[in-house]
Image (cartoon, rainbow, N blue to C red; front, side, top):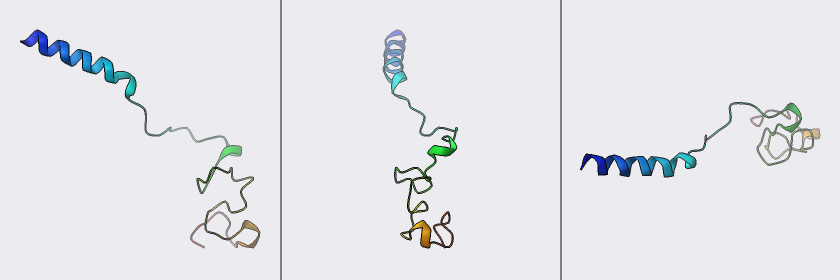
Amino acid sequence: MMIKTLTIVLAASAALAGCVVAPYDNNPPPRAQRDRDRDGVPNRYDRDRDGDGVPNRYDRAPNNPNR
């Protein structure tokens, strides 16, 4: 009974070993690729980099979505 249980546990752990993926990466992206509002457009090309709906050229605080 014990060997059968151990075999099942080992088979299950081997099957699931490749399925575990880290939920996030601790290394930030390079400065040129950062995306403050996470819309898929890097900040250097984004016309509204903080995602508050006000274009950067008219926004008094283009990096702060609360202003």
